[in-house]
Image: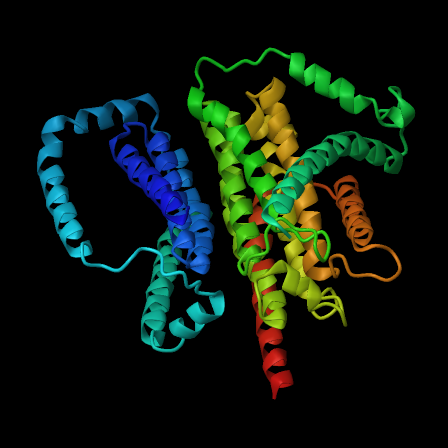
Length: 169
Length: 317
């Protein structure tokens, strides 16, 4: 039962990701990407990581992708954007990335051949995740928080230029 | 609860929530009318309750039209997303000690995830309509939801800290001695405001502000698709009331009466309070809304988090 659920979700994830890559319409591509993220969340849940699954939905599908859609709305691509994308998505441009991705897939399959079974049966609760993050991985957490702070300051600086200019007018 | 019992209870919850939302469309207009010193819909059936059926018939028999300039698949998908996400959110609500569909250790996060997925409905609806008013409504809702989601999650962390679990049943059980509305009064205040903003009801209904944007994101919608948006909005209102009851007002806990009845009474009072807010408070300007979110509510939630953490550590010794 668990295994068939896993493979269904995995199939959805792969198919929606492929669709996200090949759509010419940016909004349709984004919707496929959201579906793909949801499918990955289901995979996390089935593999015994409910906390990671919830965060995947709240943060990736719920917040980051909303910002993506927001940016697309601001750009207002419309018909011309679709036409341009179609120009770029010619089969010729697919060959090299396709071959490279196939190589990676081959390596992955070879590497995973000896990996243990997919579901361990153990469920990792939020407390365990927190203890690991603020125990052995505290350095990574601190570094990523600094990175985020730098991003925040940078965004404020870039946005401020526009505010000052508007007030001068 | 057995698997079969949980599934049948889930189906019952879906029917009850949709029915409740339908009745609420009439009830809200009626109560608003009374508070504003007029009658509201009072002609059809007892107290005007037949209005629900009349509205339903009207919406069902309307022409189901998709504008030729709209992005058809997205235009049709958008209104269903909000209803599905909101109904899924009810899965983790504990209505009584044994009355729940799903009790997982990430219940609270599941609820937050579902409310954040409901945003797409408004966003995509506004975008797919290919209409400038709808687009502006969608843009506004995107900015509003993202800003208010930040402290919506943070405002609940105080409750999680005091309970030590994300499970909603554990949160209710932890309120046996004292409801969390007393130690977490700041959390309650911020969560309530975030909740209204997330379900984009008045006074935070800027995405559909009818004075400036005709009807905002659902300008191009009509018939059943429009009804789905409305259904989603009322489901959101009920869901937020259920969550506030569970998290801050002791859920099903209460003396004498059966647990389910206590839960329903609390939810009903909260819904009435939200309708009263709609009747009493004017809509803020858009920049005021954003400033309130980032400059007042976010620092308040962080302060609440800091204080709760300090007190929790101090009590532990």
